[in-house]
Amino acid sequence: MLSSQLIILCLASFSAGFVDSIVGGGGLIQLPVLIMALPSVPLVTLLGTNKMISVTGTAFSAWKYSRTIPYIRSLLFPAIAAAFTFSFLGAWTVSTVNSQILKPVFAVLLFFVFLLTLRNQRFGMEAHDPDVQIPLWKPIVLGGVIGFYDGFFGPGTGSLLIIGFVGLMSMTFVQGSAYAKILNLTTNVAAILLFVMKGTFLIHVVLPLMFFNVLGAFFGVRMALLKGNTFVRGLLRVIIFLTIFKLGYEVARDYLF
Image 1 (cartoon, rainbow, N blue to C red):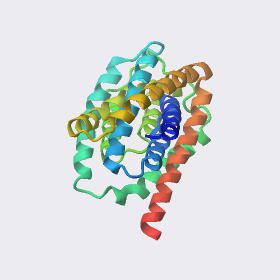
Image 2: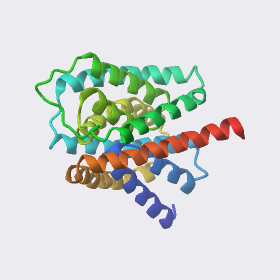
Image 3: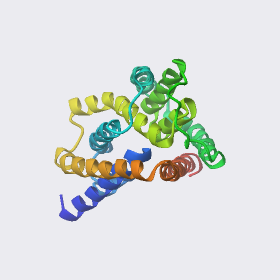
């Protein structure tokens, strides 16, 4: 690989790790750069490479958040179990149903999520009261729905997890981001195992980009904890908007052109 290509990919991986550690959506940065920099490589190999790189930063972010934000196990474990189970179900479903059909639906849902963050200025700004008991069905429903979505489709999973934890569990954006990293990591495990078994990733690209992805995640977590919920909310709006734009473009390309 040319040195200029590697430099561009490393910068993209750093940026993806930084953004993903805060609000998710790192794939919006990293995958397009991989596709542009390596046009002759099969898409499935680039998808595997992207997943191998991003999961490293996600794992580091989850560990880094855990050192500052304590996880409530009674919320986390049911959500993990539901997410892992339903991500498999979503992956199986996508093999029998064309996911392109639901792109307009997902775009509209994300648009309403975007409006929610704009209209409700207190949304995600107040921490969960530890004395308030959260019903068990909430983490199960959240993990199940988003797990299925990630297995079936995927774009914006990290952002939707944050919104889910904030909306259902009355968490702040920073808390929601910390919990989202654990669930995002869970839903990616099956895909990672599959890519490893099939060898559909570029090892000479993965290793250096893993380092820069983790480096970006390191600074991203520090920025989220330092700047707080207002910063996370603002960046979350940007990522959701970009995801809507991406889906909207793909819908227009598939149905109008």
